[in-house]
Length: 148
Image 1 (cartoon, rainbow, N blue to C red):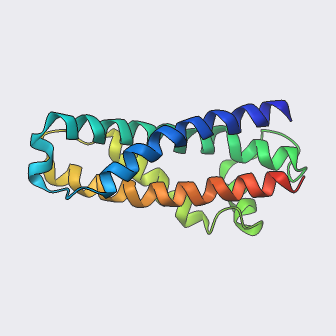
Image 2 (cartoon, rainbow, N blue to C red; image 1 turned 45 degrees about the vertical axis):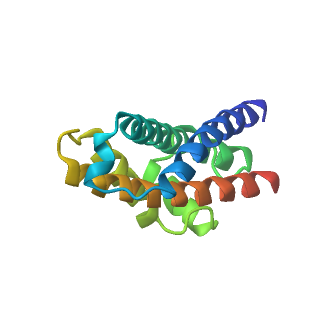
Image 3 (tube, rainbow, N blue to C red; image 1 turned 90 degrees about the vertical axis):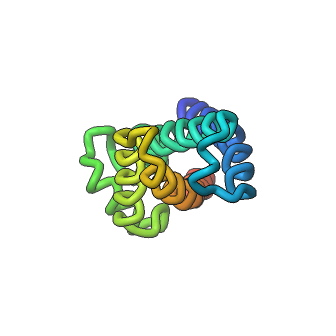
């Protein structure tokens, strides 16, 4: 249980930082000119890094740990697809498609090129939407974990 608390604490800190970037980005008019300002580029990079780390930590550690601590699974050896299907059944994630979309966004970010501004704009928009989904999943995991 202590390990689960540490994972939640770590992700809470990541969200606290990323929430600031998210709020700043949502308040901006983001267009082609946005990326001409170096501070804006830094803001986007900070947000995307935080978003990716949060999504990775939720997927790599938190979901399985919450399911294990709640005695829904017996160990870490369950296939991720089975974990996602169970998470959907338990109402932790809306659907496996939502999680697959978050992974696709994460993969797009890892393979984008900074000089393709249209691609960056599209990926940033997707990441902002994905961040909202990741936040809902995280909140659901916190609520589910408190039941046990």
